[in-house]
Amino acid sequence: MPCSTRPAASPPSPPEPGPSSVSNYARWYQSQAIGRSKGGMTTKILALTDALGNLVRFALLPGHRFDTVGVAPLIDGLQFDAFIADKAFDSNDIVAELNERGAKIVISQHPRRTKPLPFDAEMYKWRHLIENFFCRLKEFKRIAMRADKTDQSFSANIYLVAAVINSR
Image (cartoon, rainbow, N blue to C red; front, side, top):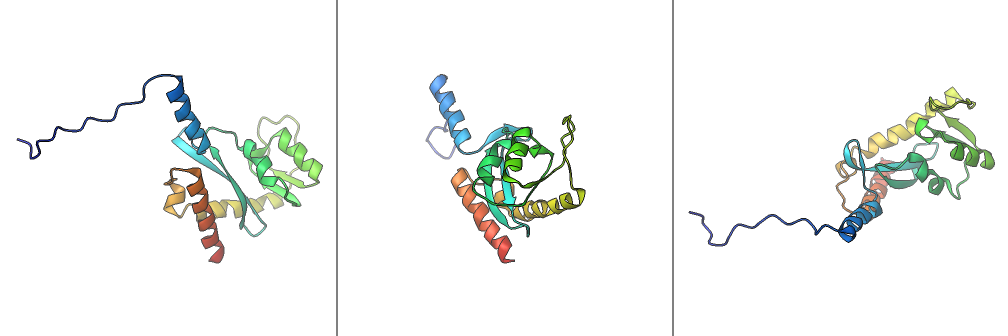
């Protein structure tokens, strides 16, 4: 015999099917930079660091978005001499934008690129600075697991962790 006379709670019912409930749900996820990827619901962090590996700017993208989408807001209004990135950022639009700015392009070529780009292998080795930044960033559990519901609080935690990393 149960201890309580209150009836057991039933599980919450899903929203009524219809276009408004599905689109509102999808809109909320899109606005919070959460998207379905191979590993489930994820968020991509695109970061721009200086020559010492300190955070300059970052952008949050849903997990299913291409990395190249977030580059324009990151580099807008910044002056730099070189842009070092991995294969995910090898696109004609980014290369054209960087050529207009007069920046040196140091991007590992995507295997599908038909016309090879000039590539400075020695300068590309500096890419470890951004990789090291992400390793230090993911030492903090709230960042590694995206423990925040909204992108605003997640961004605030990234800024906080970047300040802690810079103070070390």
